[in-house]
Length: 503
Image (cartoon, rainbow, N blue to C red; front, side, top):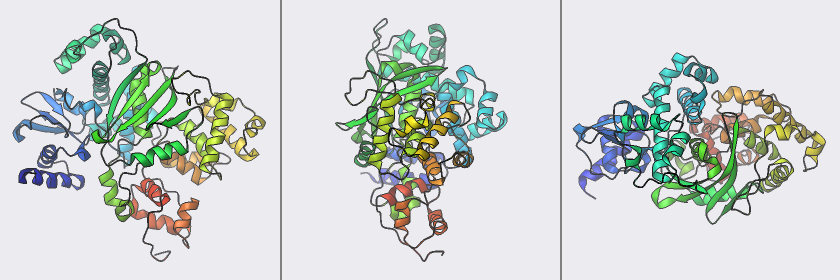
């Protein structure tokens, strides 16, 4: 390794603890270090394109480079996406503060198609903030307005479909959210200065919809895939999901515009490339952006492992690639969390499988272990408490599950796109049978909250023998804002240094 490249690596590591100055960003670009992937994008004046820090093109001169916090911000300045490193594959950023949380949830709502039927003031109202506040935090996080971000996402999704599938151009335009092929061509050419047919090397207009589509998503290494797949396999719900041949497979229903889109998805890691391959069934093709967003959360692909390890210190040393397993849908995981109360992981999976068999809709897939969809809140709420008891639940847990489903079905409970985590936890604990452990566990996994801590968890309390929950909470303060990851490491039995309780 050259001395200059070594200096680049050293300076790039400083990026984790310093502002994104031009010098630090250029050093990270020189190092091509994947831990900076998605943290910023580079606009290159000499070519007119913008790249990821991991791009392997010939490095441009520093004076030709400018730096942006998001793809939308780079496109706002007139740059078009690099066809080699493909900015749409980059991992996102993990929200660790209130502003970041608002911006992240707003971005997820935009990606799910919220602005197709609503305006920015309505988006702000959905988040519980003013339109002005939304625009400010969005600009701080992404360097662009919500509308500009939405336009960028639509075009990047179209580019993804053009490069990763053989869908006809009309189909691409429709599934990317454009009202007509003409409008799609105009916006694409205006923004990227290339036509859709130029992006796609071979156009198959009129070809039939394939059985499945394949996409790739990048992440920042390290990633402990063996641990993650074992975690998923041990909790797999019969009929809904399975882990086979190194891949995770499950059925999925995405609601968009009042319409249900059922299908299946298969996720296969490619560790040598620091990415995953996501295969999506044809039935989910109209909602690909939301499917990919859910897979990002499920596998915690936006995590920043170096930042986490620096805070956790010795706790993270044995397994630096541990990720926070997420969830597909807040209601689904809330049901799972209730079923996990006071039973083993295996027993909870068995109970979930019985519930799915009882009221989950049948779906055809090419996988023997995936044949049903997770039941909707309406379907679970329609089951009397006595019927829920027949799957093996106590009366108390059956009543809790019925209440949870009923409140979700009636729109009295919000379990997706949660912004105010503490308020949502408090709301959950108001339901009969849901205590602080269950509510916090839902926040940890269903909402991807990185700073949840289960001080009352049995294993955690065993690790802190002699400590009261308040003392455990006090000790865990050192792990903010990554206490959810601390929980995972503590569950793995990682040694910890304890001071005298109360100190």
